[in-house]
Length: 395
Image (cartoon, rainbow, N blue to C red; front, side):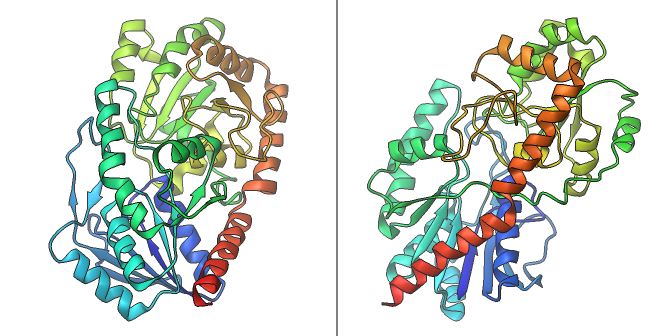
């Protein structure tokens, strides 16, 4: 097959969607398929790059300023008068059998949706982020954008949608009813090997942690993952484990957690490491006693990678987060209700003070990832779906 992979986010830009789309693209190429990647220019990455069996074309882009409306995140867009013609030329030359899009609100997704409709090329769309914001005034804006901009483009191409978890399924059913040709449940895939074997002492020395128990929190700090609940849980955690540290590993785009920490008098227990290269993530995981970061928004790539490393995870999430895959509180993860700060603190204290129990949870979580979330398994499922879509279009 000839597979076009489309995502405004692609390495060297960091992020779960970026790394997953690259891993899948490389997997498609390794399986013998021709792969063209269309993405947005980022920093000094080359405009055209060929590696790992991929041809990567980075289109000129501009970056939205960091605002709360933009989820305080660096989002690049390629919109300009020539982009539709450029995308059409690239895809006509490549002649894709199927297009795998990532991200429903990106302009490259919209441009390739128009192409897919006109050229009758089937499209599979992976939705990684829900257009939501905890602040009511922004939430209304996002809902309006979903209804007036995102859904109309989706309705034109009618892509099949990858459902990664139950929260995303509920979001899709609420926002995009009638704008797709079906749902395919495929969880996020992770490489369970690259996260193991890190040098935790290197991180402990860098941040002067000594032997302190470490609550690692991986991922960029944005309004949807603001770390406020973790900070509010810290007073109870520190009462039980006075030397515990909260180590936040990710770019800070939203600073409310720091303001809350000062108000609660726990800022001394928080270390914000900032953006960390992907190659160093295994070191941070090796230094962790426990990991927690999602704050009730489901379990994403960072959580699964922590579990793959054998780190016990505390997650404010639902046991049915992944359809057909059992998350068992106290067995392969520690769960609490989203928004339950006291429950979050209780689970963190348990992980920090009961090392035998925490270790077994880490072992069981690692086994679950290898069994159900390995990139190899997820890649195979994507290829099954793409092959079926390409074949059905050819009939």
